[in-house]
Length: 322
Image (cartoon, rainbow, N blue to C red; front, side, top):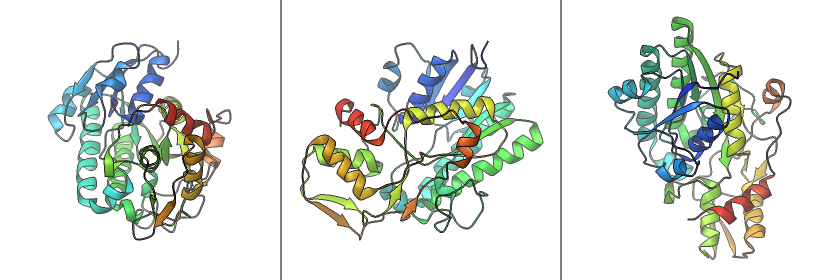
C-alpha cells in the first residue's frame, strides 16, 4: 500500500490554480481529499473538472474556528491558502499581503496541532529571498537579509510560516515539509484576476485581447524560472511523503527565461504581432529570479519537467478561457 492510499488529506486553497492540480495529483495517488477554500480566486469548476466528487468547505481561514473545524479528522494538511497575487498588487499592498497570509498560516498549523495531525506541508515562496541573493539561488536561510522588495509583505509572512513550522516540528514532533515555489504556469485552471494576475496569464490575456502596443511591465530583461503547475503538484506530494523534515526545497525549473523572450514565445504561439512597449516606470521585481536546481536534483534524481515552456504556453492558449 502506498503512503497516500486512503489517507484523509486536507488541501487548503485546493479550489485554486495550483491547489486543484495538487488535489488531482493526490486523487491519482489514492488519497481521500477534502478542500478548504474561500473561493476568492479559486472556483468550484476547478474541482468539478476532476471527474469525481471532492468535498469543499467554503470558509475564511483567517478565522481560527474555521481552521479547527476543517482540520478535524484529517491525517495530512497541505496548506496552499494565501493572499497570493501578481507583483503589481503585491507591491502596492504589503500590509494586506502580510496580514492575511500570516493569519492563515499561523491558524492552520495550530489547528493541525490541536487535531493531532503530524504530517503538514508549508507552501512558502521564493519571495523569502533577498534582492541580492546569489543567482541562481540555493535554499538559503529564511532570515538572510530582507525579503524581495517588490513582494516584501508576502515574503515576511512566509518567513514566519517557516519559523512556526520549525518550532512546531521541534516542540510537538510534527513532520513538516516546506517548499518554496518560484513561478508556476500552465494547465487550464488559472482564474483571470485583472491587475492581481501573474505575469504569464497577464501577458497572454493582453495579447489575445488585441492590445497594441502591448505594454509589458519593466525592462523585459528580468529573468525568471517557470515550472509547470503539474510538476509543482507532483513535487509537493513527493516532498510531503518523503522529505517532511523541515528542510526547504526550491520548486523552480532549470531554465531561465527573460520576460522579453517570454513575450516572443507567446507571440509565436498565438500568431499575433503587436508592437511591444516595455514600461520601466512599472515595478518589475528582481532583475534575475532563478532557482538553483542542485537540491531538487539530489532529492529527486529521476524528475523531469512534463513539457517545455513553449509547449506549456501552447497548452494555455488552446485551453484557457479569459
